[in-house]
Image (cartoon, rainbow, N blue to C red; front, side):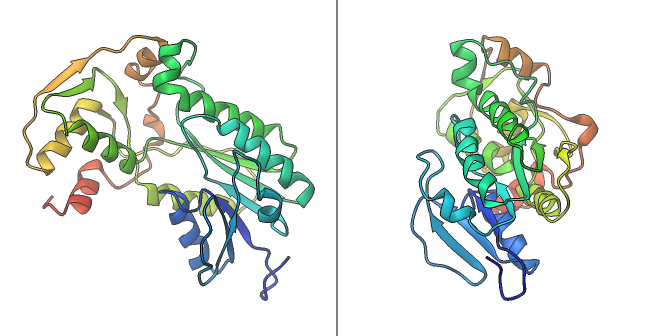
Length: 269
């Protein structure tokens, strides 16, 4: 199915999430018609059609991919991403999709998830790596971009931790947060271009230890909380302390954690 301008709609999974809604808006602003797979029924908007479906339950996916040529797969959770990717691929292959774009995470192949402790804390990385393999083995032309953690996710974590009178902070954990809007810009660029396989990672402008990120949040909120460093066990935690989630050679993001906090919390920089 093509639009009145002769272009097939672009499907975005996870199009109502933090990243997905930014991708949807940018695609629409570029003049493309967008289709969003959503677990909840929604009214269509100008240039955006919503299809009710569930990747985990394998429901509504065929209707969502029908007539599309480009799929941007932004739907993701802490576990089961490979199962969702497999359901998507099974529907997309016979539908004639010519470009599947997937967002993954920096460190997916460097954070070992072997023990129960590893899985409890970092199962997300293993799930993303498994989904990457589903995409690469799908037979569809594909592009996969790995990004570091979003500012939004770090903020959510810091807010939760700061509710405690003493804040337990993973000792030595390192992150290189990036603005979700910058990742959305790159995903749209990739989606509108040719399939490229694994493309260079995208990471924020600088790396921080988790304690530094939390302290920045506390300062911005004018809160005073003692931090209690906790050294977590397991191979995955050790890898994160050693920088497995960082991409120092791909620090292409521009918006810093401090700038993000200032904008989000309405404080002066």
